[in-house]
Image 1 (cartoon, helix red, strand yellow):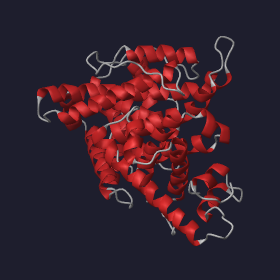
Image 2 (cartoon, helix red, strand yellow):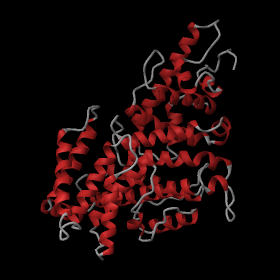
Image 3 (tube, rainbow, N blue to C red):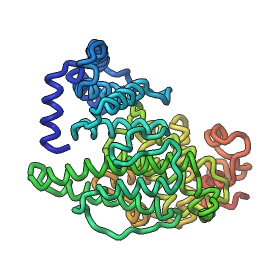
Image 4 (cartoon, rainbow, N blue to C red):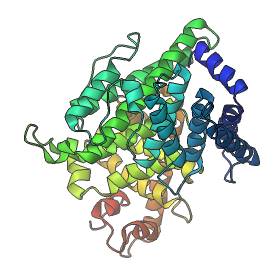
Length: 442
């Protein structure tokens, strides 16, 4: 957000009590999330929430004040807080209210919103859509074209082209690479993910107080909003009209790698955006990261053995596992076969162990060389990803030690894996827990 937008924001916030408390609510929420505690949000958050609601209700009683810019902004702040704390529900009454306010303003020819408020609404909208697998409601604010509730793939392409036209021309230039498992649409969006990753590294290397850095940050913020809008529009199109999976009268069915990867690709891109581009903290109270990470893990768990180990491209799967692992390390805890630990992390390390064997990866440097080909921000990605690799080393060593102690006895899968998969653990999980040199039957 540029300087002029910040001035507009705080000018309006200091003049409108509802927006004033909404702004303080966002600040208190951010501080609560970044502290990383497991307790409830602070009383300060709920105080500002209650005050914002009180002033909004007063404003709604009068036709002169109910559609004020500050009132709309305050409702958007409440919707952001609702998304941040709402682990269980997938709906947002404040987004519903925001949608009604925007509709009434439009009916009364007051649809024009200042730049800062458009960005705030877009940010709240894509955060809620990302967390809850919901249709983005305000993409038309970004795309300047009507967005249909049930888009076709053609509608998705038109929306993508409209959003693409708004990207700054100064973004780092690089060719669009179509990786195995992506089609033309997903490859182009992933190209934008890689561009923003490059820009994040560029900003890190610049003078933090320089004018050039401020301009790069403005472009970065604009790109983030556009990118999340594109990813969420693509997800909604995928849910409503999965042409990639089934084909249509005008478009052939996608090839097997694309069909196996598409659901995982969408979720992992969102997870990467929040972890490394937004730099959100993957703590136990990070609702968006928790929900998106759960969807990515589910997208892998529903794959058949053939889809996972034959159709799914191995380099892309390695990148996916590192992104999930970084999220999981904050949501849960480091796994240990000796007892305790996150069962999801254990499941993740089992798959990573299997993949390491298939790809003959013996060191972090070898793995890093592969995942860097995808989206990567070195100063943000390297340390947590290396930690995950070291956790994998320890996990495999523990399993090897246990097998040596039990040598001569019939080998069975650990109880942790059985709790995830039931009594019949899939072969690829059993294989991951056997040393390569083991003579145990497979």
